[in-house]
Length: 143
Image (tube, rainbow, N blue to C red; front, side):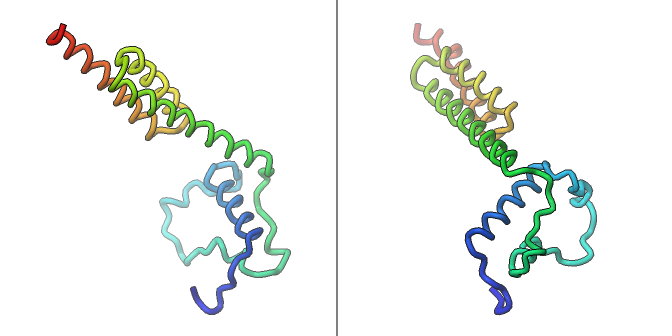
């Protein structure tokens, strides 16, 4: 931390986090989409506007309301819950009822994957498939 940096208070940090969420979620229609392929001319510091106490610089440049941000956060939380339930069902299928829970884990994994939780959905699909395949491959040897 440099000596000219001003520590941020909680309200300013919260505003900064909401602004970052708006930018990263793609809800800000003024966002430049080609920024990831262009070479930066100068160092960009997004937190610079929050370090000063001037109220005219603390304005947000987004037309997204706080209610829309709250809905987005709720949707992301809901997506994670579906992903974790799918992972739990797929893991349980390795130990009990491999066909029933395995297929359920695959279906829930696909739902989680389509809702945006790609990592948990992929793991759930893979574990559910492994449980079902292992059941059908091993049952002839033990029946």
